[in-house]
Image 1 (cartoon, one colour):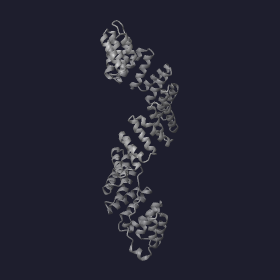
Image 2 (tube, one colour):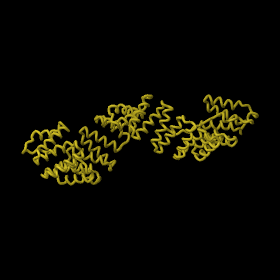
Image 3 (cartoon, rainbow, N blue to C red):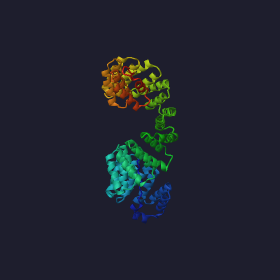
Length: 485
């Protein structure tokens, strides 16, 4: 939504001078008015210029000639005529308003502001001067003054939709999202069929995190015009945010098809397809997005993840390496690269990546957890324990770290310490089935068979298909140890 600079003509405010009526026939002037009413601006200008040949100092003819010149884009002639008209009139707010518009067109903002203020000195409740002055101030980033002038304009004409829209746009530029929504909602009440207003409202609600209101606004816009790419894109995004995935893809597909060169449309389509586990199609959408904006780190990471989910671990590793090359400070790219290498069977390379990531992100518990797990999987239990303890310094309630520390102590026959960590894991996540089963195994090693049985049963309540707990429960005998997992 662009700020408007209105050209306002109020004929009744301009009264033909006596000198004009006495010195010449009004034919040229009258013909100019008729041509203007008919929409022939060039013909009207020619007629007014002809009239000026007879009465060069008449303020009414000068004002009309200047105003039509302004509308035709002949700004220098407009300024010349309107300046002369202002100097020769007894004080016309319309002339000063239109002179302000002409100055604004050529970037003479101080003169434009002065002209608008002169118009308001003559007529303090003149809507157009307040409105145009507000637009001028907003154009220069002088938002406080702009907001005051929009408010005054709306006091005069509270149902002017463009004033509400431009006020909203200025508020939006100033970061006042909630107040911008207020003005666009006011415009919506006045023009409920205005799809631009509805789409802008949708984007503002989306920005403010009110996805349901955004959905309502976008749906209202699409009910009027079903072919609005931005509304489809915004609606798809809002639906994605509230996890209504079955409705998302069709809207984002329409946006992507209508705007094939729009990175956001292609990228968001990829996200929606991935959310529905349509990873092959998501990969194609991400590739299209990268063709538009090569090297976008977010897109590379998501492309790599789509490849990973399809089991293309080598390809995913290459993509994640490219993401790291483009954005070395993106922690998730390092995490995903290490996981991809591990899945590809390259455990040594994966371990190196975990170690490098830990050096780069020493305060990331996710990275340290990955390194700890890598050590654990390789049988390096001492190194794993050291890293798990570092994880707990960064994230004291991390259930996975507590569970795996418990396994290490259980392996060392330190059952009491193992139970401490299994319980700590369950305090953080009572549904963590691995820790439930492992706590049962620890109790069984202590000979507490009833407590062990209760934990195995609890694990199966959480996940009836969890095989280790089922096997441990079936094998439970007073002298028989069960296996942790």
